[in-house]
Length: 254
Image 1 (cartoon, rainbow, N blue to C red):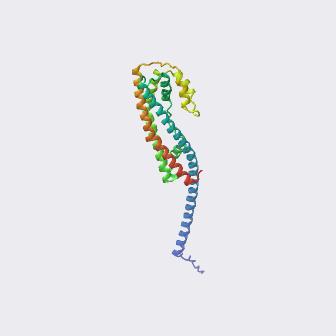
Image 2: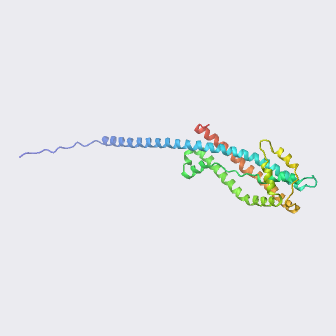
């Protein structure tokens, strides 16, 4: 009778299992680090594209804000002169042509529109976080300021419409358009003013009560324009300038 001996597989020591676990853990961990690094590189490249686009848009915004601030100051000065002349027409021997010239600036106020496509993309795609906390905060502040300005514009639209309505009850729109076509930003408003002052221009309606109502609205509205400059446009320009500096420094933009 033949006896078969059983082969016993030697038991592995606990250290063997420990090293197997450690090697598996390291493999998974290294894979995680590699994926995380790859994702970080991709996000940084994406952030740089956003930064470059936002940098260009903010440069356009600051240029537009500079023009608006200067233009609004000029218009306010002309409208203030109109308000003075219309209330002291007889005393100062003011002619209709003078009122036409200064009154024509009633319709020359522009509304600021931001080139904020990139900001909307960042917010809509949820990628605002990849820009970093400091830049993200500035972007959020800028976006809130734009919304605040838009709300302000909505509030004043009805007032502006009323002023335009009164304006065209007093002044001939055809004559106003002819005067506007003569404006030359290169040679300056003073040359246009001097040529207009030589004309004899009729008013559609010279009712003193209507003129007084129009002047009152206009004076009120110039105060609104000054407030918009102070509380909205100047802070927007400051915010945009600071954001431009941060983008330029972080992403080495020119």
